[in-house]
Amino acid sequence: MKIYTKTGDKGTTSLIYGERVAKHDIRVEAYGTCDEANSAIGVALSLLPDKPFVKSEETLTIFHKIQTILFHVGAELATPVGKEVKWQVKQEDVEDLEKTMDEWNEDLPQLTTFILPGGSSAGAQLHLARTIVRRAERVATSIGTDVNPIVLQYLNRLSDFLFVAARYLNHKLGAIEKTLHEDVEN
Image (cartoon, rainbow, N blue to C red; front, side):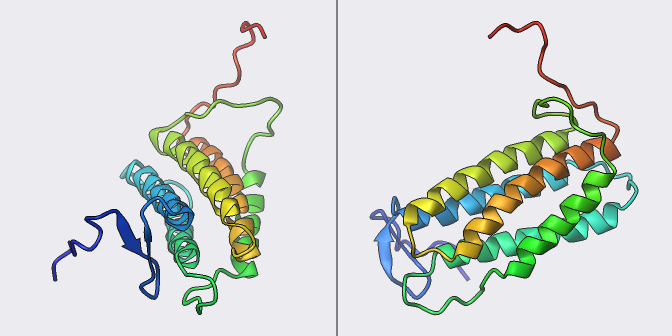
């Protein structure tokens, strides 16, 4: 099977069910940004050390599920209004993120100030993924009322989750989180 179709050569692409839209359509921007975030998460996971850490298999399983659901978020955003959604994000998906965040947060040092994105390579990449998810959320809200509210809730919670996940991986990998520099004046 060939990967290229040549159908997008003139600046259009298909939504689910075949409706053609411009490649700059807000729906394409929304699901494309979800795809970008998913790729950033994949890069973060590829940067994990070969040596397992405590709960590393469980962590990878959680991320596999998140990447799958993020793919489903993109599919919902790529489904035209009035068409059946093949993969629907559910409230329990949001609740799973919350549960994992609460569990992982228990292992982390309490935040007393802002931290800068960074730490381990994997942690830094998750911070980048977090900002991409925030952008996906902003773009998805631009679509308007035609977006499943749970999709917006999931994106919002996912960005929170990725913040906690970056801290969690940095902690598990022994990476230091840097705080704001005290000598910088406002």
